[in-house]
Length: 228
Length: 228
Picture 1: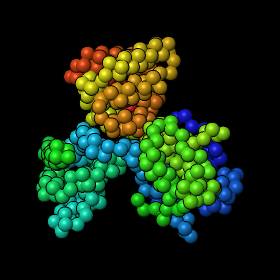
Picture 2: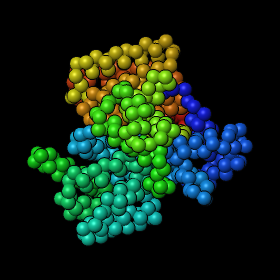
Picture 3: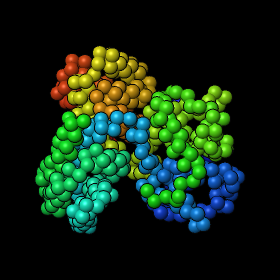
Picture 4: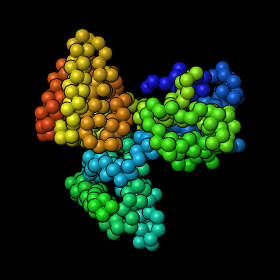
């Protein structure tokens, strides 16, 4: 990527990443304190602090005031990593994102039906129940919806998928925004179909239920676009 | 995402993103100079500078010393946005990434065969020629290979796809690394098949050629893994 020569904070932050990897620090683990880092990296206190701010902006560490610095959850998965903020036509973005989800999510559901452990099945069913409860109460179910799709991604036996879904998840609030309340009943019904099929370890049924879920989304988007 | 309250630089960088959007600044456009930003954002010079560094670390702007600050290309697409640095098992990562590429790239090739303009077809064929020339000379063809796959993504009529491929492209050097030189002949042959099919606007042939390209990759990875 054509950028200027990396400055001291960039080089220090690369060293800190290496330190996290070398020490095998995982999500939520505490980094050595500032004095130790100053010593080990041979850098000044303010440079180490600036490097940590860079790492926090890239979601690699989380700085808790008065407590210390910790490895973030899903470290390195940036906020809006595909730069959707910079796509102005949100309706086209919603439609193109859905096209990508068609390629990925039915297969992902099939894989989850094959690989999900009992604990993962329980979690998926619980999140399906929670979305349903929230949606029926007329409450905002976007977070529960995202968590449901993420739980399936976590269960599918592919390391890349949860990270990819974290990228595509930005589409869920987008869809709810574009499509209004029309999808609620279909979302509940098709989520239930996906959850039941995964619980039964029936890959084909899980694939088809997820496909159907996306078809409903597409129908509503096309309908809204035609009216606009 | 559970983080500490955003600090001043984070809030300023959000304002600068809004300014880029409001003014309709595109890739390579110059931002107003520091004095103007200080005035418009009502913030100090050093805070504006720190906000710009954050934006550069997120690949939203590019700071050229002595020249000014510009909107980056593919703004907002972070380096290693899925945090692959933090997946230690690179062989499993290569295999799982390939599984994801199987879901996406054959369909992408089919779409490109449908949507590619004459200029895009010319570009795809040129990049295929270039990869071939480099590979036959025993040179590093990773960049040309990446550019070839990106050109197909740009031609497929979906706004999300080029951004998604920018994420997955990190897999190309990875594959070349994992698989050594074994793939060269098959890469050349199957690239040619994909390019020819897109040039002929034959969606099914493009899909199948890309599928075959990935099958060769998978065979080599499985073979290497079995030997390891």
